[in-house]
Amino acid sequence: MKLSILDQAPISSGYTAKQALEASVKLARAGEELGYTRYWIAEHHDLPGLACPAPEVMLSYIGAQTNKIRIGSGAVLLPHYKPYKVAELYNMLATLFPNRIDVGIGRAPGGSAEATTALSENYLQQVWNLPSLVTDLLHFINDDYIPANPHATLSATPVPDTPPEVWLLGTGKKSAILAANEGLSYAFGQFMSSEDGKGIIDQYRNAFKPREHGSGPKIILTVSVICAETTERAEEIALSSLVWSRQLEKGNGKKGVPSINEAKTYPITEGEKQQLEMQKQKMIIGNPKEVKSKLKELQAFYRADELMIVTISHSIDDKIQSYRLIMDEYSK
Image (cartoon, rainbow, N blue to C red; front, side, top):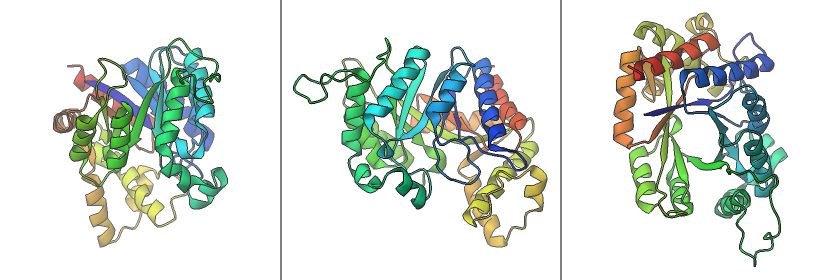
């Protein structure tokens, strides 16, 4: 089973954005050393506690400090941008780091309404146009417009020997059907979806139209995981992420992911305790054997080709240790 990393570049309480981005580099390098297949970094805009609005900048930095792990966006929020510019950026990355670049495409705004307006005044219209935006991006990346197309003489240079691999990311039927119609690989965000994930993935698989002979549906399942030497320690580490989610909902999470001690002393109402328990149901929290067992169950249930793990903790050392324990357990 392939295992990969999704990094949201969270800022921990008491730390700076620069330190958070440096932690992302450390995580990518650790992921490569441990044998993870991919490292993707997310795009967010003016969201409290998240440090990366420009994955392409971080990918150039991370690519220069790694050697073989695939690196990519999770995701480029395409409605904000012109496909040609996105193709130029990722073709350039694929030229610098051959056969290592992924382009994950998403449709979410990635931030507040004010940030969305500042980025793209016609965002909603571009969401409706996403199928055509994806089609244009694929033509630019593959450099294969038909001669009659107005863009036929235009190349998204530099054109790499191996084009970036394009994935569509999503949590619902629209993204699944779009990925299937375009013959794209699909990454399903199980950790943030409240819909029938298996039904969505089955719909993608059944509707898949190959872009080229011999290609077939390919699925990444993205899961939220906290692993530690003991279940008790994993629960303790996870509390930081759980409390932070409540803080963000109440508008007071701007200091970033709280430390374990801060999370333990944060006042939580009975109603919030129930919400936390519901949120934990979307996560995998435990010791290595427990985590592996639950991951294997999810992989079998969804018939995923690859599992991508997102881990939020206050300490980068706890985060890397979580990824290390998971890979060590899978290697047995």
